[in-house]
Amino acid sequence: MAKKGLRHKIGLLLNEAREATSQTDYIIIGSLSVLGAHETPPPQMVTSTDVDLYPKQDPGRAAEVSAKLGFGSAFEARHGIFADAVSPNLAALPDGWQDRLVKVEFGKAVGWFLDPNDAAISKYVRGEPRDRLWIMAGLESGVLSMPIIDRLLPITYTATTREASIARVAIAEDKKELGLRNPATRPTPRRLPKPTQRRKP
Image (tube, rainbow, N blue to C red):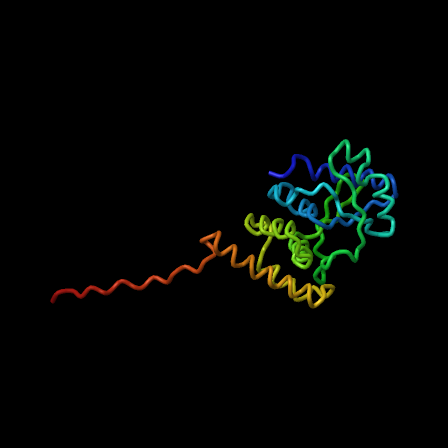
């Protein structure tokens, strides 16, 4: 199971952010964005303690949130997580990602979480080892869908040619790894029909 109450803690964070900025809606990207679609994802997907976010209507005020609720803040000391201000242009995301955001209401504050497969694309593009572990945990648990990821990569226009190439190689590697780890993903051998027995006259 995921850390107990982690999504609830993000709700507390967003409500305090609302008090600090008067902004009610926040976009959440990065590893912990999986908590929008899945309250208890695999533990390997929620090892981060930083919540990558920015105000939906006024992204430029993200720094105000970090100043009060960021690393080393009293909020982090109490709850074990902190706000990390990010730019809307930080992650390479597929076209239409805004339409797939997962809305979660936390009282007077609202979190708009990246769809897990969109988050996976940004992690494939970045290609760090921790990203690959996050992705594999999602694929093995069914939180992520490789067919959907396959469809999203070609429409990730913000990725450079080199980044897209790195992502394609990583995706191919993970497909192979999944085939080795999970026999159910391997093609089922075709059974030959039983020979017909001739009846004696």
